Length: 287
Image (cartoon, rainbow, N blue to C red):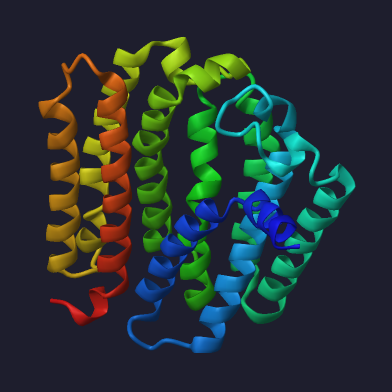
């Protein structure tokens, strides 16, 4: 029983849920400005997490043939047959239905819309694009940038400059994060026949794109302060994180071990996300 529950838990890709929930909380706390409505927070958190989980289940369903060819995914429940396809589809449908019901009943139309954009882009548009073009990574960054927007608009009820900046910050952060994965998981992606940038344009080009996007993050993230949505401490912290991230990649750019380089850039991207989410959430109490 426990093993079965674990398979269903993994089917919803909890790592993706937790990472996206982190950015959702950042958007929510930024919009709340210290006046936190606990009921609304729980509703948008639960609704968003369930919708993300639903999208991940359907993504696993669509990718089950691809997952058979990759070392890290070939033991997933749908691939091994331990989770029957009808059960997985029912599970994904239930997660999405409950998620959207919570968002519709307890948040607002904009938060629901963010969920719709996220699941449509992730399951359908990205699901098709990843098999055909290396630009799928850009497309896939769109659903990954909707959770902070959902958290923000659930509070404000408006899509303003801050909501747009939150979206852009997360889109740009994801690009080096996922390009790094495409380098150190390149063997898997080639085995599955997926045209990731590292396979199509080469590792060196991918590394250059990573640094370019890190530089863009360093410039874009502080704009929340420029437009007076955050204080100066926020700007200093996120700029410092971006500079450290860029320097980490730049100083070892010519290394012969690009796989190790990519793993380090990936690891530091998680530190950047944690730091950004924390400083965004507590900004109201800082200068």
